[in-house]
Length: 559
Image (cartoon, rainbow, N blue to C red; front, side, top):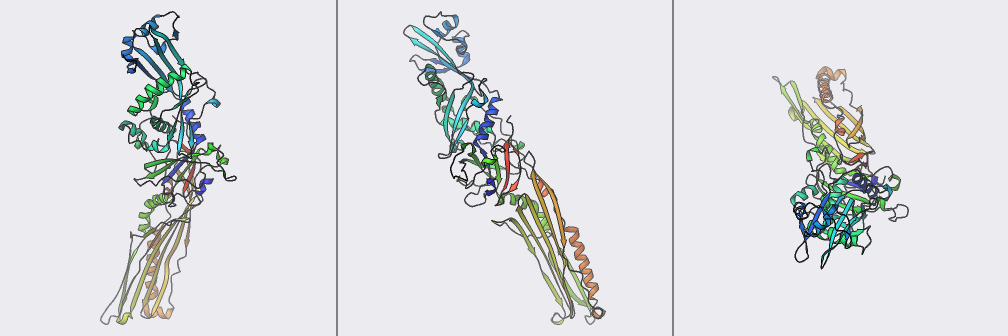
């Protein structure tokens, strides 16, 4: 996949993670959501004041004026037709016009005829948004000198929706500081529904209030077009803009942060459009594969500005299999592992101590003592490039000697610990090496050896379940390259007792290391959960060529 080129840690980008979904998949999922959902019906009524201007009126007040006649349920009438009681009631009221609508998909439209909800505009970093209604009725009174001359009612066909189209700048979706607090709370959804099509419709629905839509599906100049322009785009839309409320009362489930099982806490987000560039022709020839990119930061980090990516997130060969990609910056995932590993590594970072001393009337007795103190602080580095993403290193050395010019005894103890974490393909490879070097001298006889030289290589082969949780299988290989216990020749041993001392130190060191230095637990890799688990199913997982953690995603059926 082209996402194998993902390089979010590059200074040109710097985002903590990116979610990219194709225009085709967004439209397909939005259509499914709208088709299978029932949304509230919005009804609005207007009277005419003494100067002929429209003035909004509540349903309850209007029913008093019209003696219970709802204009939205009255058929067309014109001068010359019999004036029934409903028309008489309307004529004797101040009613002017009204509309009734609910977003959704009309009942009798063929699936292949459902228009796209969005079109991603790369050049202007904007979205063309089509507001589609399952039903739409608009009615109006026309007056002459003698009063009511006609009553007109127009209803959207059940197989051909009227479209209200706005161009929405992506920056206007995120910048909602001018909106009421209750609307901002739903727009600023950084919880489990942040990437859902329900949330995106809500965002577009609010941002669209900044510009008046155009109408299609109704012939310009017809009474229906004129009435829609006057009522819906005029009186109603103006009122919604003034109060910064969602068009047609669309809303989403309130954000409940505690339902978010993601390991990463999203705190800031920006949107951008990436065009699909054909790698063969270097042309932008498949707008369905343009992606809407959520640029995400975590834990209050500053969000870098939106810049174009140098790769496609989804290739044409993947179009039928996946809806998009989620990519985690290598540094973010490495830091996640660092938080899990550091305590364990510190337990195997030992500070050394040795002491030699003499006793007896003529200082003829030589004594040695030694110790290793765990839980020291290693040096941690995070390489910027290459397969190694994390490295721990620690070393300590201590030497002591006794006698005139240190001629009777000397001891050196040098432990060192190194841990390397690599991201390769679909594996995490953690290599840890514990080395303990010892030097002992008794008078003029000495031995030096690596009492412990053990390397444990843990290879975690990763997969991902449908909910975005990493799974892993662990293969652990242990190599013991420790030196054999040295042995002095019989003549030196006769005078020094060096062998017994060496064996004591060697046995203690090996036993100390083997009880503390072990393979890492499997849950090191299995605790991570991708963001967007309520919105997407996850198909595979692999590290990119630049060690970003990447998974293909598909939308779950929206609820």
